[in-house]
Length: 188
Image (cartoon, rainbow, N blue to C red):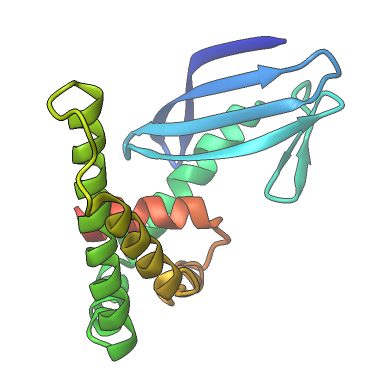
């Protein structure tokens, strides 16, 4: 097994792009490569699989002897982030619309309840682990059950914006990138 982390630099439309790469390759020449952009955007990443010394990224095979897979991935991340930024007003408008629907309101209530139960459970677990309490309170099992009930109520909810963002931006994106963009630019 071979693992390496390194910085990557490239250019797109006369803009310097920076990021870092984490690559893991196994004896059979399989593995993966993860790339995250750090400039001019940050905190958004993507990954690709390595098979037979070639990189499979977004359905395309990249031969590392011909072109840098990390550079291709970094340029892709830049294009995605730039497109998201260029369309942020429309995305925010759609986000506001979805957040005001009855379906989202039900999801939000159950998600908040689930988070509250999980925070209580974590707090009790930490107190028990650190010796603050010597036994679990009798409500502990109830909180776990209630948290699971809330989860099951919302597990099939799919935020419609996840499917709309690639259409609005006009570029294929995987769900991990979309969720990162939503978290970074709409929630924070």
